[in-house]
Amino acid sequence: MGDFILTLPLFDYIQSSYDEVLVLTKPSYFCLIESKKIELFELDLGISQICKQLKGSDVFTFWQDQDWLNELRNLHVQNIFILPAKPLMPPHIIESIFNALGLKSPDSFLSIPYLGDQWIESLTLWIHPGSGADNKNMPFSFYKKTAEDWLQKNKANHVIFSFGEADQSILDSYECLNFINSERVQVVLPNSIDDYKNLLSSGVAEFWGNDSGPSHLAANLGIPTNICFKSTDSAIWRPSGPRVRINEFSQDAN
Image (cartoon, rainbow, N blue to C red; front, side, top):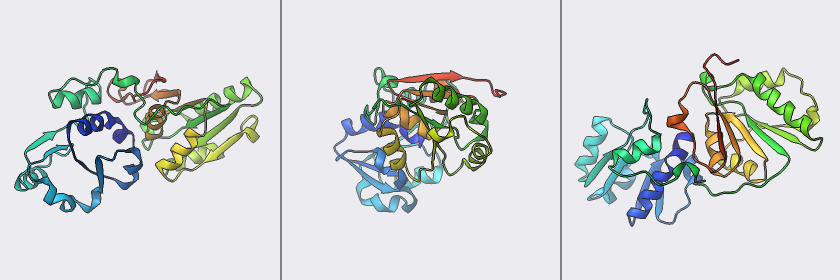
């Protein structure tokens, strides 16, 4: 989810430059694009869905597989733009994408909430302590202290912890601990991006998390977002958004 959200500035450019835009991606990401000009197709069903529309088109792709490129050429596309998928060095991924197109990246792109500024202040702190990769995660004790500090600031404050499909071991850590004022701590297990969006849009004071999909989602909804970067490079992967705070930690942080 995070990588897809990072490409939203590219979608802005493409839909402003073309009359018709066809996108192959995962169905779970469809809800992140709201444009009458963009038609969405399920990635796993392949390119056969749009073959007839590809002649004379421009194709933007993160895939560099030669068979895939040959298939596109056989369909007589006009131009193929190969975009960087996993740069190892700065600049930011958005800048790298626009550089690959020979274009200047959008002005102030890092301060734009591409999913709309939907921040509603509340007394709730949202924490997503996972990321799908253990080496990106801060120790759960870090988020436990963050939560307890928030609860102690104000007797009306609440905390929501969210856990994704890949966060079972972190959820186990949570369930083994006792929280101060635990009656004001809630656990949610969102099943979709819409579930996350609904939670964030219902009002949270701020968000804490690792370099993860939910962190990018929160940032691009305008939520004050605190992101812990531990093993990935924030200069490349920092999310866009008007209220983002980056917290850098060494890989041996505990």
